[in-house]
Amino acid sequence: MSEPVPADEDRAVDDQGREFIAHRHRFPANGWGFMLAPLSWFAYFLAVYALQGAGCAAGLDDRSLFGVNALGFALATLTVAVLAAIAVSGVWSYRAWRRLLEELEEEEHQTRGHSAFLAYGALLHAGLFLVATLWIGIPILLLEPCASAIG
Image (tube, rainbow, N blue to C red):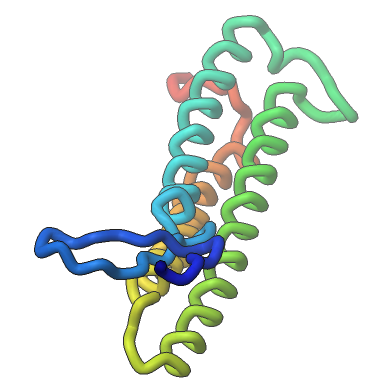
């Protein structure tokens, strides 16, 4: 009879029939954590351009909210929310990456190397997509949302 498997591990068999224990990787050291920042930026990119186009067509740039342009306020709020979410994702990924590196140093065999790579990749994604979000968000803060480029 085999020993019980901990909650974060699965018994698996490779193609040669050898049994081994596979570690389940917790968020953000898994595929979902790796893709969180890119997916957040993608959703933000779509939302900003859809909201800006629809808001200009509906005349939201003529309305005031808290003393500022309502459309500009909505776009700026969305930008700040996504920046905060990506920043939190980056901090979370950094902590997971450091924890996994410490675990790798303590273990003789590197069973969590894949997790450390994904956590580090999630950290890099967070940095890259934080800059990409700023790149889109800064013009939102500096320019009128419905200003025409011509005349």
